[in-house]
Length: 447
Ligand code: 2IT
Image (cartoon, rainbow, N blue to C red; front, side, top):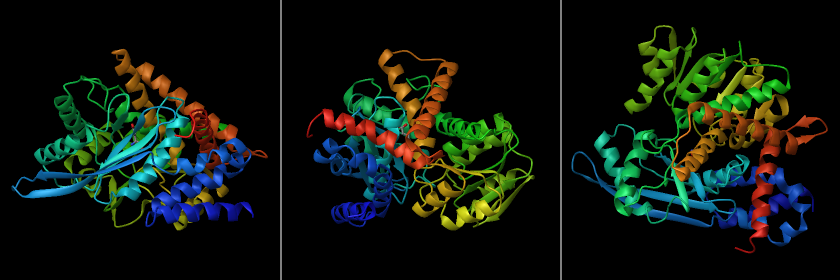
């Protein structure tokens, strides 16, 4: 059998066991294609069925989340926690509140998280959770009641040494606060059970910025290898949430020109670049719960709104996906390249379709989300360390450590992904992330 046929056979098994989960299949397929050779070269791993075990979550919990809205009407959502892999540390990964969340979404994210967390160099396993709860247009009181109900079930499955959730799309500082409050009340325990906490109650400095800053640090390393820097480059950044905000902030600091951001309603171009006021306004848009990037163009005259259009049509030197999975497809990549784009960074998890990622990796500089966006969970890991020490570090200390981690992830991608002088960051990230988890699983026996 050829390698392609072997992978197809493996995927048949995965698809039969996990029907109707296209996102999970996409994530598994990508990892298989990258690691197949190194896996086959380790007969002990093959014999121990490491890959077959890795695609099976250790545990997946689904639960009812009932709550009462402001009108007094009872609402029912579904909550989840997928505890994917604990070979190298407690389960770790965010919670996503988004109307499209289902088990498929969280299995793909939990699977990706396992490799990402392995890349960070910190001792964290992989997990992900969330709900199909749609935070758009909900009042603060509704958000609180939902979070309290969600934690009333989740609390029995998590813990500082068991599983440590954090934020993701739809879950930021406010939601982590309500979730933490309810956990503390139920357990009568003040522990580091969640990361992304407020800075006066155990949160780490730089955690809100970490995903975006880390992505830019990773991009800096890629550019450095080809003798370039961000200064003076035009960058397109999709989304306007937490990840986009941190990305725009760091890019601007480094002298890059952010030319466009986007939302579910379209995109805006900004001819004058971003200053502090505009960057702060991204936070205002996010907390408004309106989810409309048009608000930016209504506020700033230098911005222009393009309703219903995809941001990838804006000419740029660098493009960064910072919104959601599969937001950039093959046609988008073709258009980006045609308009002069030289580097595409996946910052959202699996921001590109499989075809888009392959094309970009072939034609321009490209790196996958599990490497590029690992700065967020890295600073979460540093928050766990600070909580264990009962100490808080300075911004400089945390930022330096984040920088160092991103550099080491970049170097691991280059080390494992370079064949005949050409670096494929997808293969590098998958192989480096996989080998560490696989080795740990091998040493811990059939569990
Ligand atoms: O996708 C991610 O890495 C996150 N949402 C952050 C996870 C975390 O535990 O900080």
